[in-house]
Length: 510
Image (cartoon, rainbow, N blue to C red; front, side, top):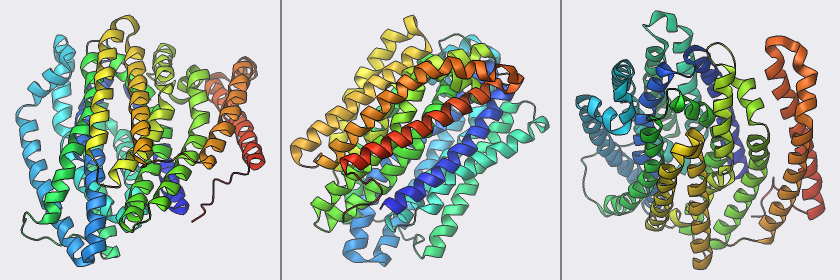
């Protein structure tokens, strides 16, 4: 499992690297303003629906269901099951796409009501949304094939799909001069990437001998069970997305630039979330599903503890960086072209607020696996809805006095409520058992993080003085110096502490 986690994490890191380049280009070309706000909303809408109907809900219901069919009836029946689900997804997405095209202005009115006050921004957002929305159709089918590949232990192709998306957008942004504005180039790059990703997973599934076998849809016992688990999963996933929809709705009412400030901070924030949290959840869910199906609950809980320990150890330095040096991060990554010092400061404030929820959000996927691996999608749904209610309430209260950082702070609070409630119920039910291995890791990581925060506090000013004479490379050099030295200190402290505690993260006792 650790080999798979490393592979997925490595490819996700490659994706995030390509994503950094993409976002640097976006920042330099679009900056923080009405054009950036329009593109952010246009690409966010299909991604909201993708998370509701695709990655979040679909995987949590599909992977355990597919694993059960594969275990009980063999590969042939599993491929038929996958084919029936594929056709159902295709039909639903075509219908949703048709509705989105017909009612795009209404959709923008609902989800970004503040844009109506600026007719130019509103019209551009409608145009860009009609370009980006077909991405949802392709990526939903990619999600199905990725789940099938993951269930068979093939993680590489699915983990590489985000790299394809980023590379496609980079290519289109590089030739943005061929379009009326850079927003159009970025939007077409996103949609074309959906076609390319679907081609990649289809070829991988074909070569692995697990490509879907298309058959007439029938309400078999496996389809019924899948739909029963999918319903609560969709509601639970939609609950999380309600908070993000609230960000879009309320953010559209902020002064111009508020939406894009949140976007750029989110891109940094998504680095550890994608590399660590999503990679861990991607590998852990099928592993726990397999072990529970095989009658080995002890092995499933054992795998969960080690995944959470590794996730925590890798996430902690990002948390410290987001809290201690957010301005250095945003200046070093984005400050060039149309992205000004003021834009960097505005995004840094949002990043700090997001940072307080980072650990909780990274661990959420591992905690949810306690329930989803056993086919229980209802409990995470109810917990998520409760956390979302608090989240949205806080957004409404905080957005006026705090602006964009208030929306991010509410997201962080909701994440902690969600995680703590999941862990409490899972432990009570015996679906999670925190062992000595995890406790030792938490202790060591906490001590190393405290020392790292002290280093960041005292090293920021000297690093700024050392790099002040480097002109336009000063911000990048300062970030590299702080980040590199901080990473070295943390790794040395973590390695020494884990060794003294007798903890070995890289190998599981199975």
